[in-house]
Length: 411
Image (cartoon, rainbow, N blue to C red; front, side, top):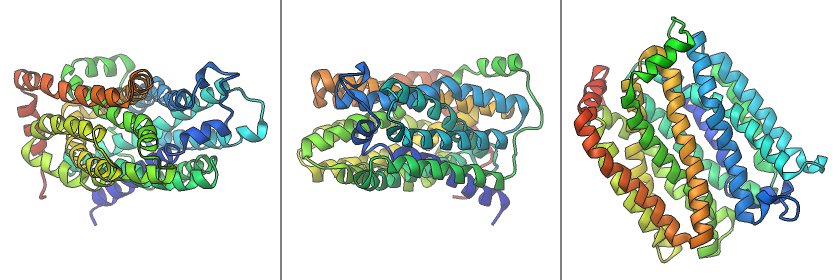
């Protein structure tokens, strides 16, 4: 096996472990926040189970948004990736373990729990974003590298959700301990891969100026935002919707989420390789329109079986869009600015997750699940349609095709 292929597998395993640990918490989030002390009588953030779950998820992504740029800039400025990934992974593991210890301590208000969750997110995003940047540094085709990241993300989510559901039914705190252990493994595993970051170091001003001069990065950032918003929507609103609409528990909910994440994961690499062949425009624009329609179909499904089929279809379409969008970031960004460019993409994605939690949770709470599905699916379709003239005017589709063919390899 070529060294780049071997390192691609190892880095994908690291991404998988981070996402797997994150998704362990999602199916049983309502029972987890109860175990951590969410109480409507003592905290305005825990007025209902939905509110407490929403703010618990929001706190992590607020940490992502606040610190992902710091990690990316620090990596580009110093010309190093590995030490920051190790530091982020181990600090994230310690944060998960501290959350698991909260019930034993028994005197931490729910606001304190949310602060701990914020710190955990701030640390974990360093390991996640910079590992993806290390994949950007590899040779072999941007679509393939981002397809490897995508399959790791999807598999982590596909397996994390059902396993997290089983762990939650055994003990609500078990997912926290599992996540802590996995992040320790991440810190050890990433040291097995050579650090291929560019040798040249950049001043902060020069780094920010270089990224500022590439406004076309806003295109993949926008699609990253809306795509992650749908993921955040399913993680919170979708989870509660399936449980309310079909009267299922955390384990069955995890399996329903896996219906999306399994095809989303397994098709990432071939779809990324396809985008190296045909360019980014068709997978991103056409795929996003169909993806939005699929979300609407899931919300209208009359039974758990048809909802599961709809989730499979949405997963296939998500696999078409995701690696092409991430590869477009690599196409556009300069080598010495990849850490900050990927950080920007992850900021957009984290804001999207936050939007999925906040918009989806608020609309579902105030107006019902049907309108929430309509809002999120409609936004996915709208941004794809609005992007068509932008792609044509700025020739992003043509540029993406050219970038994609520069280091094209065999399918």
